[in-house]
Image 1 (cartoon, rainbow, N blue to C red):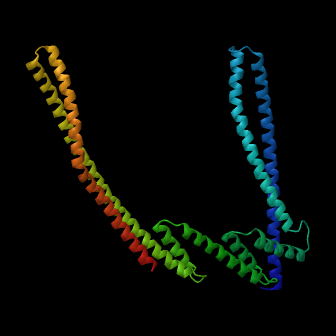
Image 2 (image 1 turned 45 degrees about the vertical axis):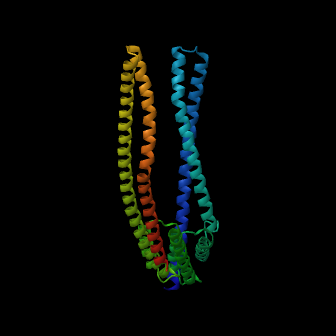
Image 3 (image 1 turned 180 degrees about the horizontal axis):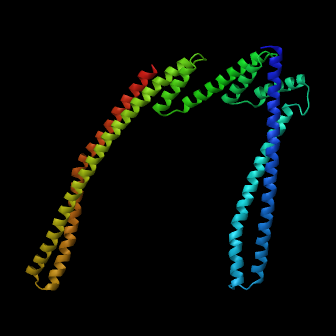
Length: 337
């Protein structure tokens, strides 16, 4: 690249920044015009609201005039609040535009008319400031690297281009490491493995790529084990639910038979011993009470008898969990070795 071509590129870069500054000027003016229009509209609507407020205040409660003014106020107030929020958002956007404008103007040296040499120096200094002060993301450093590469014949731009490329790689590397530390799913580790492989020549990326592949496989197998365990546990839970239903039916049937037998036996004994409807009813009630007590005792006996059956299922679940935990520990141990 000849000296003249290099100078043209530098001046072109400076001119692009000037155009960007002009564009920001235009955006700021449009923003200010929009804010002014909105402020005027808010003022008009606020005056209407205040007017209706005076009308409502002067009217008797419940009259048509009062109700119409009240209805208008309720309709206006939410719209006024909405416009005020919009105005606040526009003011924030305007302030950001002004900050961006002032920052760019400072980078350009605050001088609208410069010689070609000064423009070149201003553009170079602007890129250096961006590299050292404002650039943070991989995209920003990559863009700066391309700009320095375009003017690589000027001062140390070639070296700065390489420096920006290295910083872009470092930012990219740090982001990948952060993602790896927070990754939970096998698919995420596979994606990270591919990303590390793509920059395997940088730092320990080749090692991290292999680590992500192993971790992806480890997580995949553990996920499959968890699914298998949950399926078996669900099957056992279903068996427990069926067994409980059977035991409940057995208890209910036994209780019902004992209650009926107690009531009937009480009635029969009362009729034999005393006779009469009144004694029969009394005997039936006493028989039911005795039957209820016997039923409670029978249920307690059945519960005690059936408890080992339920405990057996719970033991199976605990054994399953222990078995699968050992399998997972073995898998983790194998992949970490």
